Length: 281
Image (cartoon, rainbow, N blue to C red; front, side):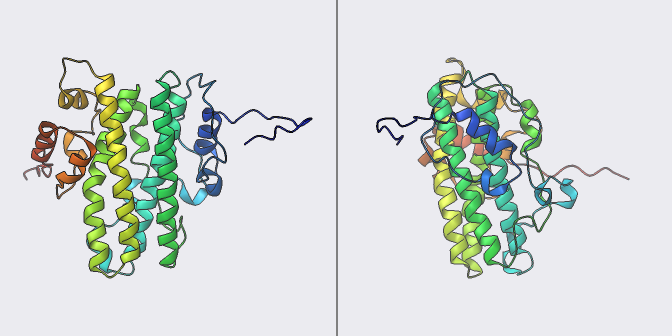
């Protein structure tokens, strides 16, 4: 709370856009992952600003995906692969942190309640990143020891509206994570790493609320006579397709808890990503 004693100087509260720009552009990881120290105001949200890439320290700048693939969770049993898996999870959460900051800057005209929701999720993503970094360090490595990819960031040029953003981030990437987190937590428990499993469980719990946020605002932004499925699908830019919004194993409970309707869940469960056809000869 500001000091209001006689003669004191009352400093203006920090604006959401200033916080978001700091998170997005700083190369200092500690600053990037620090939550706001005070309640932020949103009195001057514009003008729109769309960054092409985030600021990052040198050891966390994006490498070609061929050099930065994260091992699958089947590698959890391998002491050499487990920290790399956790490192990949941390990078996913860091990209989400940056992209929610990006959205706050890109869409200053969005409803205030929507922007407050973005800010809340951004703070969740910061916390998730810090939790995964701690697990990486507990496994004897530092965040930045392995190459990282910018898969989520490569989709940002196609996110031209708040609806585009929630369809990609909330209802595709985070939707899929409702499956990935269940499977990853089970894998961590199988290899005797309950601390990692508890972290993943917390991420899963938060992802339910993030998907609920996307679903709620999909109903607000979409045309009334268009189904939720069709509205979502029409706002996905290739290579994002419905199949990307689910994992190998489909767990409907998280979607039900997030408030998705039964038809949307049914159609998502039926979406199966087929392997590419091999060329003959």
